[in-house]
Length: 170
Image (tube, rainbow, N blue to C red):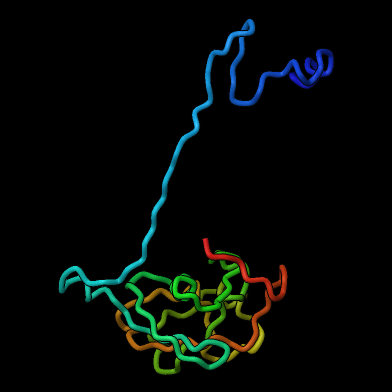
C-alpha cells in the first residue's frame, strides 16, 4: 500500500527510515546505540582449581609442524584450533554440513572419544584422505581424558563452496 501511495506522490513523499513524521513534525529521532564488545581469551590459572579444567593438546599442521596448545574442558577442537591460528577451516561453522574440520586423532586417544553419530559419519564419507582415526574437529569436545592428544590436519580438505577459501572464525 505504501508503494502505491508513493508512486502517486513521488519517492520524496516517503518519510526517511527511522523517523516518524506527522503533519510535517518530527516525532522521533533515531538513536544510535553504541555497543562496545571486548573479548579476551586467556588460560591463566587464577587458583589451583582452575588448572583442573585445562587440557593440553597438540596440533600437527599440514607442514608437519607440532603446535602445542591449551584448551579448556568443553572446548571443541575446531574453535580451539582457530583461536590459536591453526588453519582448520570449519566452513559450515560447526553445523555438521561439511568436512572441512576433518582431523586425524592420535591412535592412543581414538577410543577415548564417543563414537561418531550418523550425521558425522555422513560428513566424514565426503572427506578426502579418510582414515580409521578420522573425526570432525567440531564434534570433538575436550575432556580431561584427552590430555596430551594429538590432532593432525590432513594434507587437503574439500570445501564444496569454494576450494581454497578460508573463512574467518566468528
